[in-house]
Image 1 (cartoon, rainbow, N blue to C red):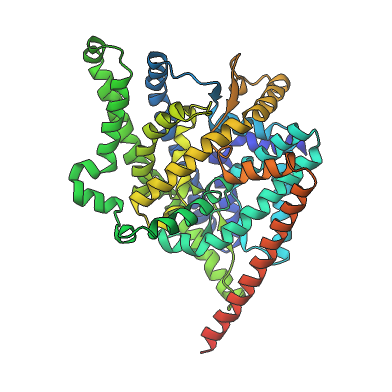
Image 2 (tube, rainbow, N blue to C red):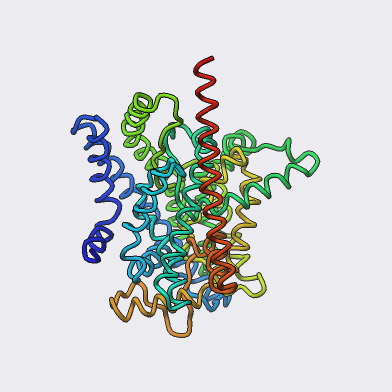
Length: 467
């Protein structure tokens, strides 16, 4: 079994998602050629997205590395990025079995009607493996590791159900889709609280600026493409140690600016491939559920947030937060983590925030700023346990991608910076017996409430249909 699931993980999303969507499409009544094309479009979307995010990190990496050298910004935690974090998570004793365990929990929740999300976003299961792995290495118990992963999974599935209506309403062509990814869902509490607090400020609740509004107000300066060019050139200029080097490096600076602009322009075009591939599956699923469960809200397909990271507000806010986050990492007292490789994951912070802020650039920026400030401390706090897991994986696998330089701890912004990861870890590791008991009560309470909520919604739908 271990070998089978390691093999599945090694294929990657670009290979397995076409297979999954083709099989799913045929099962729900779509003809094989159409189902195959849908699956291939989703696979192509994953390939395109990985190429663009690799362009972002490979372009920014040398410039940011030079800035660190010039200004002495070296901190004590080495940013391994999400691919290395995922490799560590999947190659632990918890990670190799995380897919069948979580799929089993998903099936149990569907049978007990405590969720309506079918989570096929298998490659983001590494988030659940990650929390399980660090609890396992901190406690020495694989049982507690799986316990942490399952608790995180249940909470995330319920959150996916709760946020599905607002997600589908805000984003176009996302009917029947939910986002059961814990990194995205963990920022929902931040967004809800901060959004309400901002609305209490006189006049602030009337201040609405979305990405389209920025284009109208600021013209070319408000366009994500142009912003990408400007910020890319700015980072390139800061990587020069003298005026002479700055003048000599103008071609390289302009190239970095163009590449950053290309990332901002290409991401929305690539994410449209996901939507094109998903539409036949989503439409057929809704039709099937409407026939079989006439008065029910119906199931949602749990998918990757990569579907919607091309939203203009996400691009603008993520781009603005890249230099701000680097600045914060340097000046915040007690922080030891400087995000570099993790910067490509910045886009994934906002998919569930935007439905709450209605795409408001200013509100989304403030929420992202608060979440990342807290997240830097979360990564710093958990780095020792992540380092422990990474060293064990390296000793077993001899995988250079998870090797941490001497004198450093390891960390990654993705998921380690999230409220879910930090809270579950400390409730289990710090509070011991009381903490796990509280987590059980929380997860079961959320699941039961979700069932009650969905039952009431069904009854309301039935009354409306009868009327």
